[in-house]
Image 1: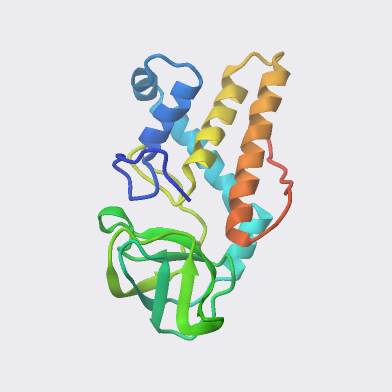
Image 2 (image 1 turned 45 degrees about the horizontal axis):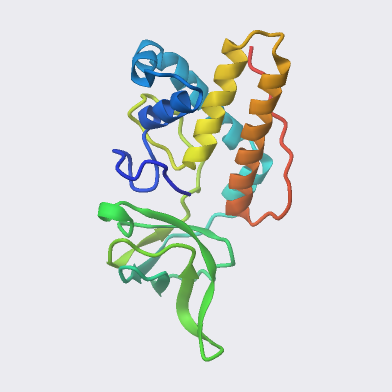
Length: 223
C-alpha cells in the first residue's frame, strides 16, 4: 500500500487521482499529461470508477469485508513497527490489514498489515504486534481499524484519493484508456495491458488477504 508520489497532495501513502492520471499518461508517452487530463477529466474519472468497481466485486476483496473487526486503541513510537494495543479484544492474525490513525507521514493515517506478535527471548509480548511498516509519527491511544470495512467509495472528482495502491490505479487507467482509445484490431496491445492490470490488481488484493499464488479474476467488459 504505497504512493509513487512522495510529495503528492493526497493522504500519506495514497496519491490523488489527478496525480495518478498524470503518472499513467506519462507512462503511455504523453508529452503534456496535464493538458490532456484537463481536457478529458470526466473520461478518466469514469476509468477510475471502473477500477473501483473491479475491486468492490472481487471475491477476495469481499472476503476482506466479511472478515472485518471492531476498532481497537493502540500506540506507536516513531520509526518503530511495534503496535501496542491498549484496549480491544482482537487477536490479530498475520497479514491482517490495519489503519493506525495519525501514524503516517505528516499525521496522515498509516495503512499497513500485521506480521505477527512481537516476541522477546522467544516469548510473545502481550498486546504488541509487529507491522510491515514503521510509524512516521508517534501516536498514543489512537484508533486502530480495518481500512477495508466497507466497499471503496467512487471517485467524485480527480482531487479525491482512495485507499487503493497507486500501481493498481495507474495500470487500471492505462488498461481502460487502451480499450477505448486503441484501434479494435490491436488486440495484442489491449490484451497486454489487460493482463498487466489484472495481475497487479490480483497481487494487491492477495497482499491484503494473505492469499498465496496467482489469482484469477474475470473483469467484465464495459460497453
